[in-house]
View: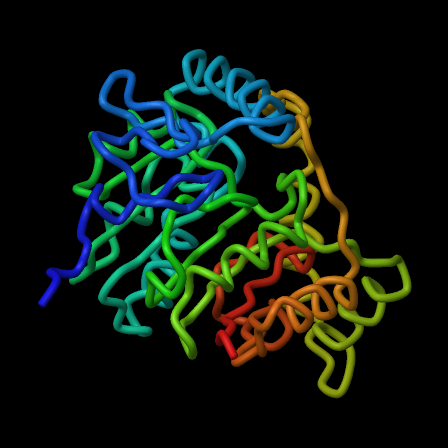
Length: 284
C-alpha cells in the first residue's frame, strides 16, 4: 500500500498537476526547483509572470519593514482568534493561502502545516517562525492534489487575488469534502448601512449612552493616531467587495457558510471594524 504524501512530497506541478521530482516537473517543466530552500511553484505563463512582479513588490516591502502584519493594524488578539477558529476545526493538514510571515502557521496546534505566498522574503520568515512546509505559489494555481487539506485559511488575502473566482475554486479543490475554509476579508459598507449598524449598537433596541460616548472618544483618539501613523504603500491589487458579492462567489465555488462573524453578530470578536468579516465555511 502506497504511503500517503507528506511535506514536500505533497507538492504538485502548478501547470500539469503531475508529481514532482526534486521539486521539478519532469513532464512539463512547470516547477522551478528552489532558491534559499524555498520552492518556486508558480509555473509558467502570464499569470505566473504577473505573480512574480507582485512578489517582487512584497519582497521589497518585507525587506524594508520588520513587522508588516502588525503595521497593518492587526492585533495579537485578532491573530489568536483566528488560530482558535482553526484549532476548533481539529485539522490534520492545514494550508494558509497568503501566509505572509507565518503567524498562524506558528500557532496552530496538532497539524501538518503548509503555507503559500508570492513573497520569498515573507516565506523565509514563515519558515523561521514555524515548522510548516512553504512555497512560492499562486492561490489561483495551488500546487497540491485534490482533497489534500482539512482546513484552509485566507486572512486578508482574497482582496489581493488576481482572479478571486479562480482562487476560491482552487481552494475548494484542495479541500476535503466538508473541510473548513476560514476567510477574513474587508467589505464595503454604505453610509446607510453604517448608520444602521451604529443605531443597533448604541441606540436601539436598548440605548447605551455611555458606550456611545466612549466610542466617540475612541474614534477621535484613533483619528489623531492614524494621521500620525506611517502609511503603508498601496497594494498592487485591491479588490473591493459588497457582502452579497462575497456570498455569491463562495456559494458558486462550492461552499456553504457555517458561521459569519461580524462586530454586530459577535461583539466579543476582536475585529478592527464593521468593514471586516470572518467567514467560517464548509466545502460541499
